[in-house]
Structures are given as C-alpha cells and as structure tokens.
Image 1 (cartoon, rainbow, N blue to C red):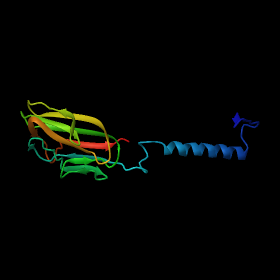
Image 2: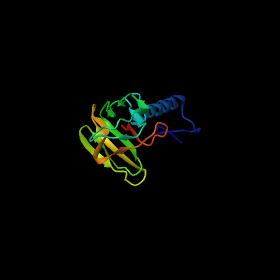
Image 3: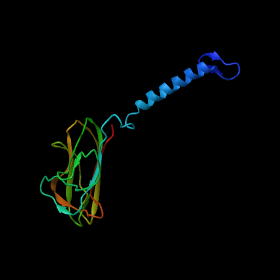
Image 4: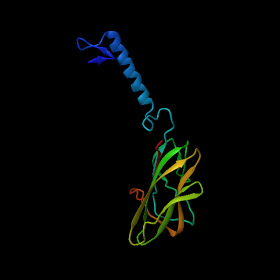
Length: 173
C-alpha cells in the first residue's frame, strides 16, 4: 500500500497524510461537481415548456399555432397567447411538436426560428393522422421559436381532455 509515495508499514497512513489525501479528494470532487454542465442549474437560467391545443382549428395562411393549454412553463418563456417561445439566454435547445389532423384533412406546419422555417412536417390526409418533429436549435437570447402553418394544409385537431397536438421545448445547455 502507498500513501502519496510513502510506504505504509502497518497498512494505514499517518493521520496528517490521511487528512491531506481526504482534502485532496474532496477538492477534486467539488471541482468535478462544479463543472457538470447540464446537470447543475443553480448558476444558470433553466427553461422548459410544454403546451397543447385545446380544440380543432382551421389555421389561416401563415398563422402561428397558439398551443393554449400550458402543461409546464419553467421560467415562463413560452407565451400561450402568441404561441411563441423566447430564448432567455444563448444556448442549445430541443424542440418537439406533435400535431394531429382531423379525418381526411391536411396540415402543413413547420418549426420556425425568428422568421426562418427550420423543419416542416405533413402528417398526411387519409383518416386521422399524426406527425411529430424533433429538432435541436442553437439560439441567442431573445430568439423566437414557434409552429407556423405553411402550404395548403390548414386543419389541426386536438381536444381539451386529449392533448393530441403538443409543442414542447427545453434548454439542453
């Protein structure tokens, strides 16, 4: 057995050496814990939200979908009256959206960052259909993310008790 390069005769270290080793180990643990990015949110503004649509709707051309039933809104960065999430800080965020169409209707929607369409989805047109899109975006403080209608499909379906159409997002780091 070795204690900081010292050979231990009886299998233990001297009390002073043991205290020194313990203090070194404790210092390393504190440093490791303090650098655990993404798991320690005490020093940063964490943000997460999830909201659903409570009723079917025919969207206007280019209309932002207002997911009006807030399920979670940590830090209140999602505005259900506008359907817009605003980044509270620069970072990497994950956004997810699931939408449903009424029977035999079409829907074209996309995830927009500020005024730019990033990804789109088209759930289909036969029967009731669902589509899901997940995307990771790098945002600056104040960037806006929302779900917006595009193209010819304008019918979205949801119910107040069954959240078929949902928009969510959270800060990864």
